Length: 299
Length: 265
View (cartoon, rainbow over the protein chains, first blue to last red):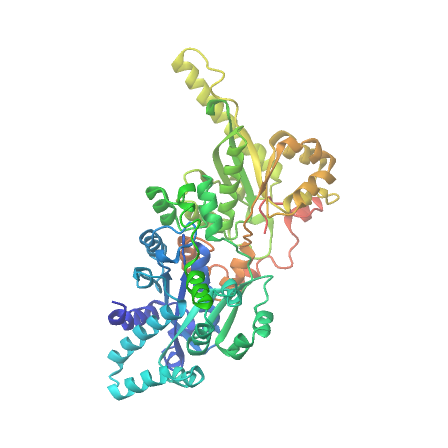
């Protein structure tokens, strides 16, 4: 379980990392530990998804304030109903295969094993609780402090940022610029969820050249309010491998080698994934978040 | 059907300093495209790293560039690394490298045809058309043809006419324009295959070296075993980037020309 193994994983990540800043144990003591969480379809996972983790870790550690101890890939459940979304078991297995050679990125199946689609905020909340339960075991912190933590979590998010500073490890949501921009799409996100993600946890946003996240942050009052919790990472090398493109190439019998890890390419071939037929899955189904929010707002 | 297809070998010349996933992607894109013409059967790909005599800034030793390319292509069943060009004491014109490889390929073909005829007793002329060799290049390569004095006319004629080009572009009309602007290229346009890469992917070896010098991650841009090799041999440091700095490039010294490599970054 994540809650039991977490601390050992983090320790291992620290031990095996070659990043010079991490080797300096003394310095590391004063740094804030960060766990990066990426939520998405991973249909299928691509080298670009994995690259985002590397870019985010380099960026955060370069600030001198953070030590990234773990990355978590959380694939959305089948109930998300996205067109062409294949079964979670395959998506998870491909993610596992592709992280076999990483000493810090892991795959978590909790989100995809939920019977219904879950808001990203709930997924982040779950991982945050796992993380702090694990730390509490390890901390020999008394229950009073834990109860206090819990109480503070229920406070307003501004109040919670005080708590966040006290917490040993930060959890941040890792995403591409498109997710940041999706905050503006009506009925896709609940406003309080955006506030929770940005206010309580924080966001690491990888941008591609050509997009201007600062402008987007400036134009949104919500994003502006939490701008200090949004870490923008520039990807200087344009790299647009999208899972959509990969699926299209696969349907057409074109090569996807070097866009995905070899082990994932092999897995896709073995299981005959991503055909014209699989792309028609959920073709006429409304995406779960739209279903949920449009029905609540209209009723 | 397939027996009528022309066997094709794709050759990429460049620094490969170091080889990146994007270099290998170009081969995959080119092969898919050539197969889709229905005319060709791609039977091989050759990565030909330039020799140390090239004199380009930051160029690490050919033995390392060769070793990295071999590691990267361990899992490919059709692209291989050839050391001939890198072992030449001086910089070699692309057309000379092409002549060498084509000679080698033709010889192999003649030999296999010879043994085939011998064992069968009669020849089967339809079964194996003569193989071809084409130069695999990136989008900017075609533009180098129009730079005055850069290419000898008969070299352009030979590369485009006798051999042919497979050029992978990132969208835009740059390659079409380059062909249009050159009479020689236009004459041979049926021998110039333009492959469109719909996904922009600009991992360059220059960016990879920059990240390495700065201690940033290059994972998933180049294969893991290449990263291990780089660390083991401590390649791509500030020192290595200063190699050949201020030196006149061999091609410039030799022909008062700019260097021309099909996969330059």
